[in-house]
View 1: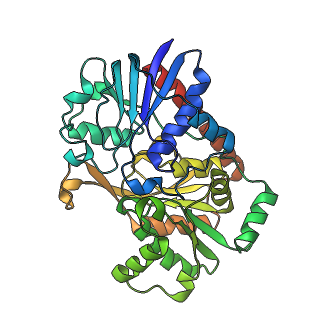
View 2: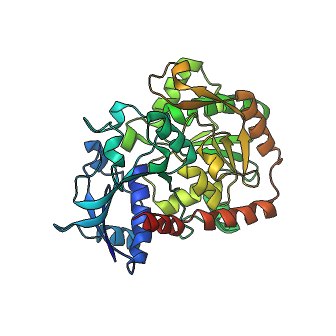
View 3: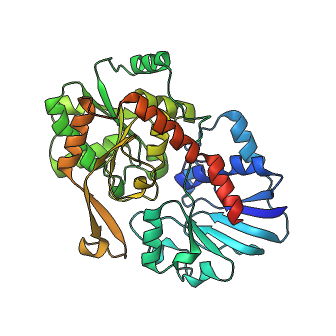
Length: 384
């Protein structure tokens, strides 16, 4: 039996912490293969420990995560670190596995002071894991050798995210004052540059002019990142100009402190999830939306290509642009989604030009099975 130490964040809803906690839950089921313990890393920001940033797991899952024992003074077969800034663990272990992910590319500021040297993560049996082929490409651009970088995707829990019943969907839409005729575009990403939310708001401005039943739902992320949706929209208006009242009145602002069961209701009450991202490390909300039975519109060419085909998604045409060509000072790439293509796909969605429901459902089931957290845990165990 291998002894594994996990170093990471628990108890908050940051993406790194959520991935760590989902992985813990599945790794605990493999106790006949692994003896695991956990060391909590300090949060990147002290604000993250404040109320309102809880992960929202069901009570029994939270107990299982919290009860994972702290590490004893021991030597381990493997230490697995998932935190930020990136650094190799100093724990005594035969192999160090470090989670490194990037959207736009790596630079020295991505690493703890003095830890930017690739060799620190790749000596001997040490490895780096990253969740997508897009992120792997960015790591190779920084200088990581391809044989030292393993792609282990994120996953989705079918116990948490699954389609709403007709009654559930009817009730949550009624509660949110969404009529049967309304068509809801949803985006739950953080309000950062790489997510493409500015582009989505501008696209919605045009779509709303042609379709009076169009609605846009955005989620607050002020607890982690300090920016409310209202503040973001006001900044958007300052850059792109005023939005007509019928547009602003059609944008729903969702609070940030939601449980995972409430997140499922959001995914399921929407008609389409839209993510016109510039760069992502994986884009887990897209996978969760599909698991809840909601088709997606995503940028083509990025990490969602790993799990989004035409049966579950509409693609936004994009150009691959080198960072150094567009003002970024780090090596790597970003995507330039085409506004015309985004408008076209939002129009296709609202007029019903999407995959037939039966085809989507077959593909959804296959995707949830292939990208389950159980599958992820087995891949990690093979590496450990």
